[in-house]
View 1 (cartoon, rainbow, N blue to C red):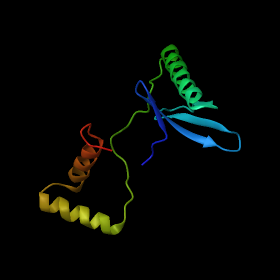
View 2: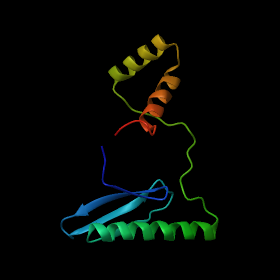
View 3: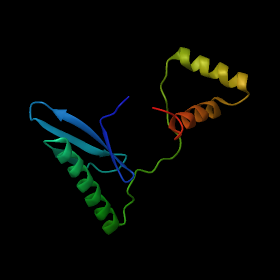
View 4: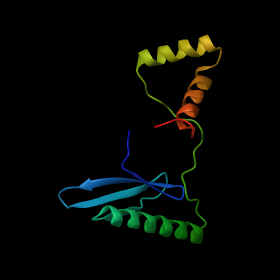
Length: 116
């Protein structure tokens, strides 16, 4: 489970540490552009992330660009053949399509009531 994340407004930033440079660095995830930020301390990286988000929001507003990537609602998932077989069997036993079964599983995982 990835926990090296920052959240501000609806934005998520991934954070990494470079021991060579003694520097935290990251990028805003889920957008169509590459927006990075950095800092030498935890407080600095948090501040830099918030500033990067605010700057990005301002640029998007000025240019009329959407903030986040748009998602079409379909994607390919690669899983082991054994897990695929088990999922098909379970979906059949529940009387739903594999697509419906997987959608319910994802809904469960992303629900607010699901504990990390």
